[in-house]
Length: 338
Ligand code: PEP
Ligand code: MN
Image (cartoon, rainbow, N blue to C red; front, top):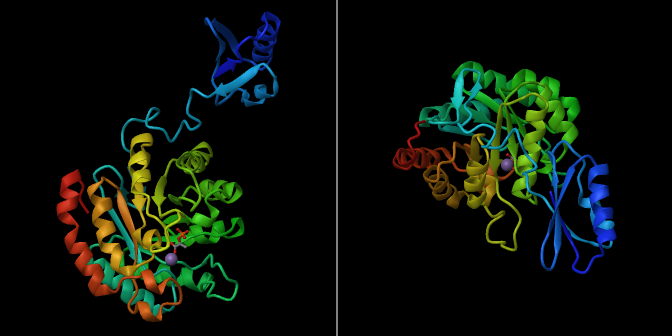
């Protein structure tokens, strides 16, 4: 870290800062300039104490961080793309994954017809919420354990892998028993106790970005999972809150590019929560594929008008077929295959 000292500080004032830096476990190296002095603090910022507290000294102007706060998720620590094994299916590197299915699991017929349709169109992973994080307590909260049972039945019939959200620490064990990928939702993107418990299950994790989460914070949420011994993380950009209200969220494709540059983890794009409008989903899928995302998670419903959650953003089977057929040229651009 670099501690910038205010101009006209006395030599004693500078000495005081140097002494504090050593006391906190860093090796201080003062650099005396013509106008100002800075003290370089040599030591690993990630394992030593943070020096931000030095700004309480009146002679300190600012404390600058040099190292990134994340290590295990960074490309520097692992230059090659991580490829995750989801019950035998590879995700990441050249392997593009399409996860598709309803927002919520509603019934056996709804889930099975959707599973068959998305599989026929080329999806390899079935999505569907059994536990739903709804804004209002009066809205459909999901089928819970019955929903998990239906997801297992759909996997048995179609061979599709299963991704489903886990909402609370107490559900991790039984959701992990049914799912191939645990989804941590945007509302829980910084629920660190849940994230740690999910990491400990050993299952691959799809980590959504919180709707007000900075990219660095999103990567630090992923860092928790790796720090707790689970390297199988997929980052998922699902839109953030902005001033724009035409779309439900603003899908931040720049964040996808940043995440691909900063991290070796696969990056999945969720255009459905990302824009909130079925008519925009297809274009966003092609955009994500063209910019080297590692996969998509798309909401598909047999009859979106009757969906019990997120009907406005779910595409029907015909629209899903059409969007899947439009993807290959965009995947060719990045050397990925379905
Ligand atoms: C969902 O996938 O249906 C969902 C609730 O996602 P998010 O956590 O991104 O809002
Ligand atoms: Mn949804």
